[in-house]
Length: 205
Image (cartoon, rainbow, N blue to C red; front, side):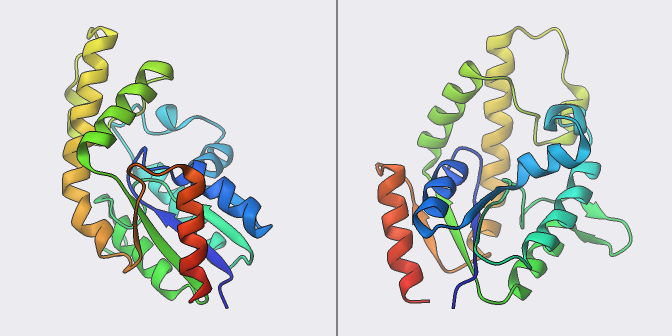
């Protein structure tokens, strides 16, 4: 019997939007990991990561929260884009936090892990809309973030952010696909249609 559902995938693939509708449909709780991390840290992701130049503290909090959520029942969990795939090394284990995340997901009994995916063009278009309508998200490449000039205008900053994100996506794509056999494209589907497809999948679990 399914007790929890993890939604994994890159930025802008619809994890939060789909997760909220799915949780309501199941009469479960929805947990957004990025929100929980910010709440625990007492600061936004951009501040916590120094605009992407240091993700270590973020990953430390993230793995703690993932471990806690993996033991809860009747929850839909919207995982951050780096869960199971990020390459920040945890110094004590000499493994990446992504590898450690994957171990937690694999050991979480009665769980279903669903990868939400989009083609690259759709990700780029959605990111551009998000960055123009909201604040700039932290860069995903620490070296890029450290070296980036602060005098870039907003349009150049958005283009820099999108290119950084797409490079990260290409690197992470095979790692995402290795997290689960359940893959669901959200291209050309409404959030409700995606939820309906997920409901059909979990009926058979």
